Image 1: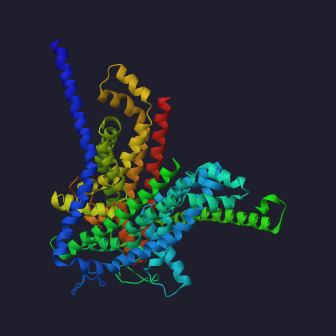
Image 2: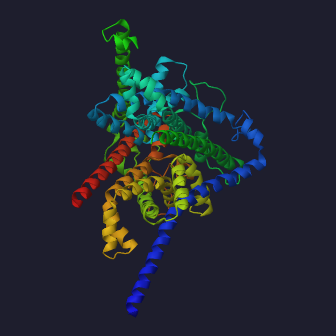
Image 3: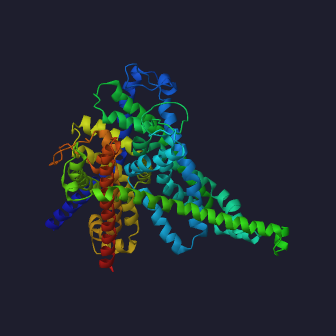
Length: 301
Length: 293
């Protein structure tokens, strides 16, 4: 009786220990988020002690590594947006049309082959895309437009567009597939052709999901690092000069990381200030995309 | 409306059919464009790099002289990083998934963790690098070591492992759980002996895919300061290291064409490693599925 009792107690103890361990595993994900916020904010506060928020967010010169230092982040933001917009100009139409083709037109076998092949694009390491942008796409662009620089926004943006293509296509496809068959059948019953059904009924009905795909792809493009570090160069400047070098926020972080920056310096703090801005931008976009996805789920499920 | 009443080939009906046909072709071409781009990328890399890959390329250290340079230290560094990342991320990720699927009673806690994991999956990888730099490298004073890099990488791929493992665990039918409990198993015995074996193919596939993401990641390791020039074999968790993608980045950033060729050679090796990892995932999946039947 007593040995059975102690055996049971031991078993209960083991169970409780395991429960605790598993909870700790799950808690690590929350700790990661806290860790990210704390480590970003800690150094950002240091940075903002030396540079005013206004100068950081509205300044148009970014020269923290020079003797005459300026800390206006807008050139990095403009470089980031320029590359991301070029990427979206590629990924939005190509991705959306691929999604339409795969969900509405392609026979099951064709889809079964094409979709995994497209997914491979998402699995290629980004540094490989960087190589491809710098040494294949840029020479092509320079053959057509000789004034193009060795490092330029256009090439990095185009290649990045193909990197985010699978994401754009698969989220749009999910949204298109979530449109109830009844809507399509209703339109066919009214005499619409397949094209009319797709463009006038399915796409408008899937709009919030497609917007979610756009926003999430844009967020991915903004956070992408290696393509721009390899192919877009390190010139922080304002404007939208696609044929020459611009520096993105991520490329700046890489540039500083490659040097030997002492921990107490302002250069070290800029890493985290730029990182915080990047984190906030992507966080807002991810949340927006999440909200859009939930909107169409609520509407159709 | 009138088109509906007159299904004969009126000019308008013909135009509508034509538009549909053109649109279908445009959509097909757009889909093909992605595939073509992938083919061009692979062909370009292999044309540039396949000739570089030979025995001495694999076994030599990087060098200022392109003809003598190789990827030995980068390949070993990738191996070390991968082993430590797997050793940390796999148990933690599966543990978290088990907790969320089998243990968490409190809906509120589960929801917070779930939203949190979804958000983490969208954080740019370079931000994980900044976390690793300030927490593992500086605060825990691990330096620019294999361990600091692996910890950073583990955090980066944890959301992927957790999501895949949860799906695999959720797919295990409840009847298995009930049978196990009815035979007197405790909750953990039920999970460990019944649920996990049944969910293992899905868990392993997800883990290997997550690890192949880690193999290709460059930015977070550059941020924590993994070095680009390492001419020795890393021999422990606290050694300095570099990895294949960083070696590729280093070579592609140099102006000389000879180094670009080396970069292409290293890319061929990197893609081969990724292909191998994915094949292993497929084989494991098949073997488990057969043994379960």
